[in-house]
Image 1 (tube, rainbow, N blue to C red):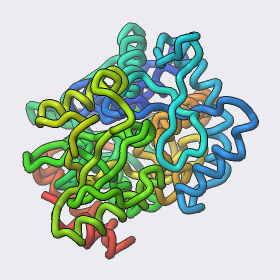
Image 2 (cartoon, rainbow, N blue to C red):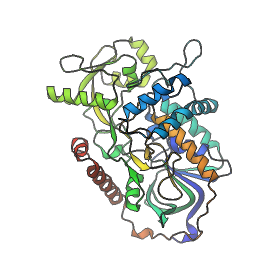
Image 3 (cartoon, helix red, strand yellow):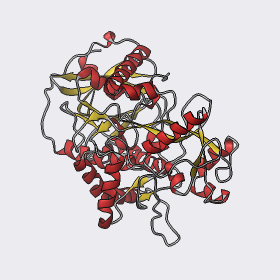
Image 4 (tube, rainbow, N blue to C red):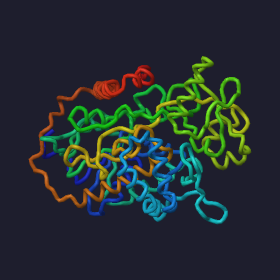
Length: 441
């Protein structure tokens, strides 16, 4: 491929979830933006976020919200990032509402705030049990109408184009095996986490941490790659494929966990890692690979209204969530670590940015507080967009050449990427690797 045939744009965003979309929408209309995504536009984990999005309801809750986030993260959080996220939340929610995002309300029209594990206050906005879908669909419908935003699906990023720690673009491969190079002023990584590398995960299987592997390859700084959240409650199944999440908000509304003898064995509203460990202990005690959840505080009609997707998924497996013991088991869920960034999404490589689950600005620490993920993605996506606009530095027009024939086929690239990531996780935390990673597919 000759250099004059490289695709050129001002900003390329890799990923079509909440973080990537909101970054694009926060950039000026005169910026030429190309969004590429590995599968189809809606095959992003943002669509799967059930519980909700946190918000600072009033200044009186700041200290409590801050402490809840820090405690869930084992105080390994970046306090500045936590402060920025919480302080920015009212404006972010206001922006979402102005864009047309809907949240559930009480009879009087006020927002209906719920609570999840490790929250001491009700501060989570939600739309039934599909908050992520509501937000992502709204952002996507707006982005599709913007003439400056172009979407390309079924396209996988396979390399960075960089020289002297400065990013010039990316190399991609489409669904037909055709490769090409994209040159841009700024490159934004919004590829999500690493769930596709695990046997049991709530993530889409194609989300395999490509941005992390390329960062390892090119010396972009990573942080806390072993800080991987295992969600305590996914619907137990022996079928292959993505695990269906039973949201923490179900426990927030009164669901309890039971062991093989039908006995309650833990406080369900503790942080996720604590609940997960309690479940693992119980499974070992009884020699099982699951425990049970039930929601005795609601009628079937109430649960079907509040949690329509979860209630229906359980029903399809033959369970009434409000009456039956529904089998659940832990599964990989979320990446707290990732590509290291500052509080504006800037990475250690010039003109390379990371947002959403791909980025690690330290806001989550060692364990993410429930429903902070959508908020974190939105807050720091906007900050990255704002800084990109204000950055007046220029790159050389003499961008590096790329030998497309030097790359192996897609399957081999993915195998190499997986090996890079798993080796890094094992290097950081062999105990975690042995416990959760050595049975991955």
